[in-house]
Image: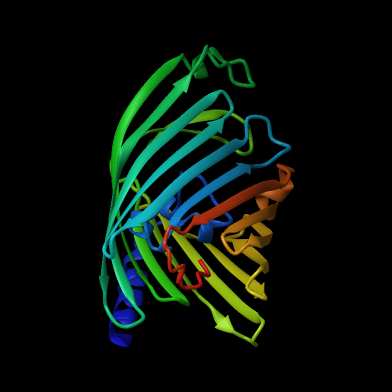
Length: 308
């Protein structure tokens, strides 16, 4: 089993040296929002899991991104998992809604390890109600009203034990139009959104009987641009209180906190502070709120502890 793990880690790292960047929404609490980017995660928690996340980015910047996600996933038997996710993304006057269905198939590789393969399929809906005139009032840059629908699909692989995981995924394989905001001018731009690649991994270290250390990393990439990454370090106390920090490749540092209100219900909050060029632009802080609820229908209630 160690040879399989080493092969997966080495192969994914080599693959990701040739890809980079990202246009899709960022998530600071990605470790609790995994099936949005990796369909192979669907059903891996062993229960019916519901997640809700809201992210308000760069509060001092007009038209800054606002992202809201809802996801639900569950196992169907021992091998198959299904999921459904909704993502609403707003950038100024432009709104985008994404609806995706996830399907996973899991193989038990050892007494403690499982390897899952996943497929994702759905649509992206983009719309602009009324003409938008950029800040410089230039008619040349005026965006006309539109309503666009783009089908898309994705794939992923996810290996995990009770205390370790590693996954690679491409949540949107097909190219589509994408609208973004220039951080320095506030002007909206149009581009082609290419396939984005994600690598996620994490481990749980037992520091004592009541304290655990949970480092994790997310790499994001698209061919032809620099690789971007998030590095996170969380501490879990009494399997209930979690406190940590995160660093995002020269653009922000973050503080995270979440609490298990009950064994099945967790509330989390993260705040991002801009650094580097973004700090010079005074874009303001970013706030992210997360709710996670597991519903265990097992009469025996023998669910294994989950740390991600």
